[in-house]
Length: 148
Image (tube, rainbow, N blue to C red; front, side, top):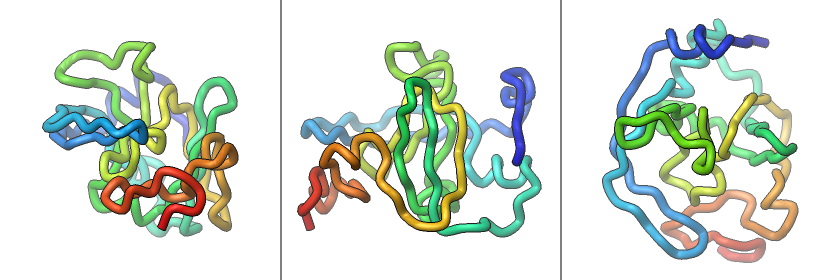
C-alpha cells in the first residue's frame, strides 16, 4: 500500500492531456485539457512493477465507488487529475482530485477520489449497483445494465 500527503502527491510527475469526455446523459465535451498524475506514474511511485489484479475499485468521498479494469487505466489511459483547463479542479467538479478515464462514460471518472484498491474480481461500484453498465463504453452506448 502506498499513501501520499497532498504535498507529496503534487510532487509526483505531472502530465497534461487533451481528451474528449462523454456523459451518460448524452453530452460530449471536446478537447478538454487536464493535468495530473497518470495511473502509470502512480504505480511507479508506489513501487508496483506488476499489477496484482485485473481490476481496481476507486474510492471517493461519501462512500462513492466505481470499478475499472486495470487495462483501462494503464498505458497513459487514465490519471488522477488535479487541474482542468489550467486551473485547480473546483470542488463542485470533483476537486481537489478526480479520477480521469476519458474513454469511458464520465461516471467512471470518480469525483473526490481518495483511494484506488486492487480487487480480485470485477465488482459493481455505486452507480453500477443502481443499474448503470458495469463497463460504460460511450462508443457502444453502454449506459445501463443490459446494454450491449
